[in-house]
Length: 460
Image 1: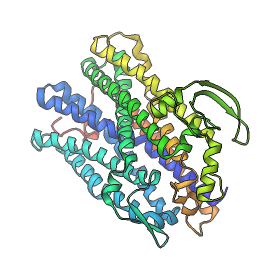
Image 2: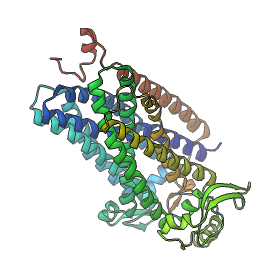
Image 3: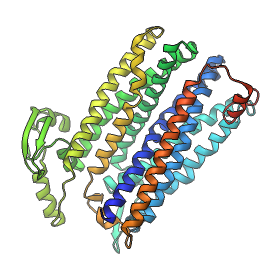
Image 4: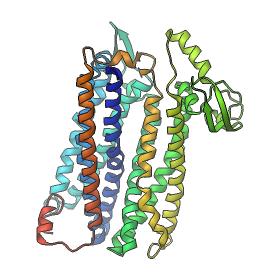
């Protein structure tokens, strides 16, 4: 283990941990805002109960997301200072806007929402949660604008060995953002929807607070269909964009070693130990050409040909990402997505059909809560590992971005410490979510109510 490998592992682990919390925050903020809107319009107490119950779970997850996200930005100065020096003029701008605009807006109005029950007008209180939902997703947008520059650099000039911004609007309208943000938004909706579906199903099977959880289940089912459907459609558009801009990522994800025209889609591919030759493959003819170009005849370049092109363009080196990681992460993402589509359609059928009480199929939904996390993690692994060996595609290699004068001991020690702390936070988050999720409908003592005063109004 050298400094570069340890630094990469540290950033990968902290990012994956953080992204366990981010999608649920994105989607659940919208669902809570919708539930409060239903209460504002109908004045029915059940919608107020729904808003407060799911709002508690949203707050727990939000707090964990903030804590785990801060460390990532520190790493740009600690482990990746050469990267920050090279691209700081560009990368720093969207991160600064995200913190000063989106995050401050989000945290401010979240405080108004938490403590504003029965203290401000109903309209102002409703506006507060919608501003939280809006700011949460705008925050994600600015982060993705920064990440998209790493995937597809635009709006810059190279001067004195650094990348400097010369077109802010090109950065905002980066074609990669236009396909990446809708995909992350859909992932947030999907994660939150199946989170609500699983918990609501658990309560319905036990007959606790049936009216509230029937409505919660049905609302989540609608959003699950929307989220999974948007994710699949946009995922197809994103794959076609990557085919144009990062063909090596597509070739690696398909285990395609040699260029094919027409290209076949891999059901199972086994390569040799060198990663340059196919040993066994089971493929669907023409399918990859159809997915990549919307026709049955386009060529999809293979790993070996793309490696030769990259060597000619950038000089000697290995420009092939670890194909086995991309191959299986892509299949995990797509496979889980199809399972979630079936689950979303069944949930909508049960919810709109009035078939929730006594339905034994509801036993499946608590187990489905974990699947969106598998899909989102697999998707991020594919997006980031597929850029290897570049930290900024075509401009800066990963080894050029790591900080100078770091030692193995300090990086290794912080890697272990961060991993243990994040693991403890994950256990704490799951414990709190399970505890509060299971407690709905259970009679509370006055002491219990006082402990939950950060969510419940004093009058309740």
